[in-house]
Amino acid sequence: MCEVELSTRVYVKMMLHAARYPHSSIDSWSALQGLVIAGFYQANSGLRDTSINSATLRSASLIAEYQDDAVLILMDNERLTPSPGIPPLTVLHQNSNKNWVPKEKTLVMWGHWEETQRITRHLLQAKAYQRLIDFDTHLEDIRTDWTNEALNVEITRLATVANGST
Image (cartoon, rainbow, N blue to C red; front, side, top):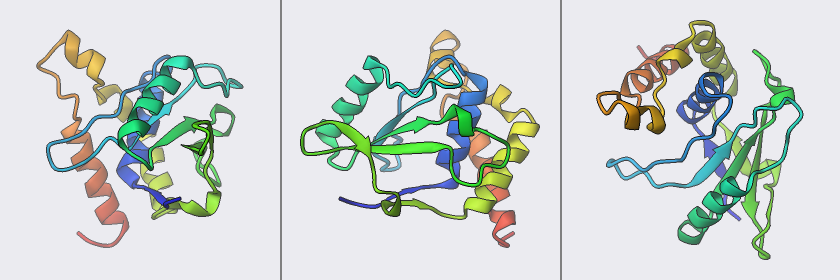
């Protein structure tokens, strides 16, 4: 079983997407720069809803067919706060029976967690989620940038400043 590391950009964009589109999940995508679809995430609309819907299970399982170490990330709405002590996410993987089960916490890495929280808090307070474009929005207006390059640049800039590299 391999380790999983969630970058600041991945975490921040999941949180911004959940804030902008609390009623829908987003498909993962692969960029031209050699990134692979490594997982799927779901954010439920109900506060106490921890169920995984069938569409998410199908999508995550399809990804797992092509990516052995695929993950399914479930946001825990009850733990979504401006400053969560630990990431409000459950990271799951497929076991040998093809069931999605929580990954050992020691195998989930959170680089720069305090800085990631600060950046997330800053961008949520700035309502950056209003600028986030998901693929469905892009299909309605193809002029919109579903890769959210401007947000990527902003997250990178904030992370660079936070880590002392200007």
